Image 1 (tube, rainbow, N blue to C red):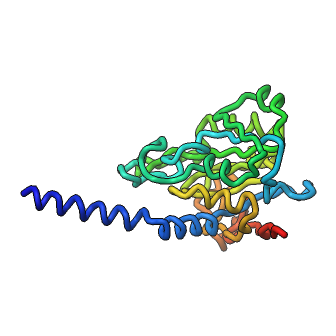
Image 2 (image 1 turned 30 degrees about the vertical axis):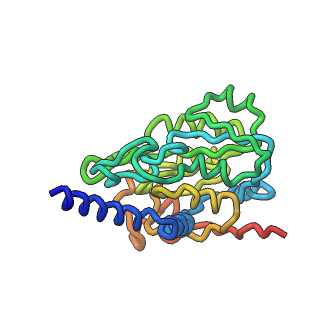
Image 3 (image 1 turned 90 degrees about the horizontal axis):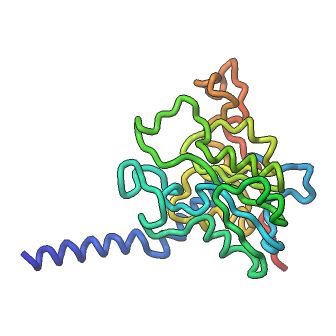
Length: 252
């Protein structure tokens, strides 16, 4: 009996190794950076905010989803409805990926939901705000409002009204963002990037360019729904297939 148990345990270890080996994680990281969609990159900034400079005096990273692997992974991760926190699986949070990507001389300050005074007095070069939905699956994720849960909107408002900011949205579906869009200098839809937060940092800092396109229409208001490409009343915030592109930074 013990031999059978040991055999099963060893088989599970081998499966775990197969799914956590570096080649598979590298492929997942590539999938992340290719799926990200750049919806805004303010044109009146010269140069545009993205790609972000790796070398800066001090940068602010904010938001509930910046340092939460469970939120990155979403539902159907280990448990049915997913989990929050950083202990559910092997992976890299977006905050960790940012810290690894920037120049060693750049100071990173993380604050989940900073107030306006903290942001204004921080002497930050720019901010990265990572917000979105908590994990969900099936009917328990139904949401007739499709709003970004608090404190996401408060964080966006507090940070982006004070300094240059890029918002990274973690979500499995389009959410209502029209109200906050004028506050943002850049907006990135990261969907559910899973365990490989490095894929987000790869394109934010210009190691790779943005190439992703929207796989479905992004609405202005929920009252427009359902709305599909080709409808007579088609008036989206961002149409099907939209996505800005950037070039990778060439290091000479």
